[in-house]
Length: 166
Figure 1 (cartoon, rainbow, N blue to C red):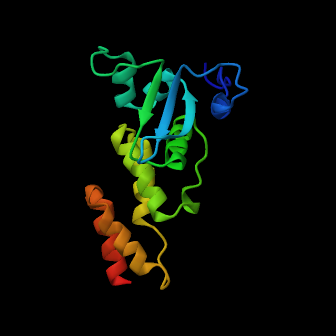
Figure 2 (figure 1 turned 120 degrees about the vertical axis):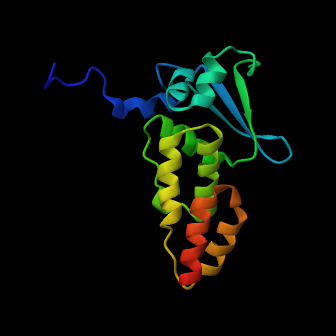
């Protein structure tokens, strides 16, 4: 009915990530370092991730042939603990302070958004990368960093061109 309040306050969704949540996660993620050691373990809810990510929807609720979970645990490699926490938090409507991230951190998050097919996150982070603030102190480093991520051609090339113009 028009004018009625929603049945659920979506702003509390991020509280499900808390260890004191009354609804425990049903999947664990072990974030691994370059030596394959666990640097962080995060719990999440398959349904929340699947709602945002085609990758996880197919992995958790698809045919099951592509993705076998041992003890409901997934290893996450080639990223940082902080980037994966931000990735998961975004799926739970947690406010991520992208404007406070350095360029490398933004690219780490963008990489996860691309890997796990979360278009809204990819678009949001791409916009921050394209509009990354430049200064005389950071322009050379920003240009070098943009060149390190050629897989994100559009955003990296646009940012590099802004550096050259600067």
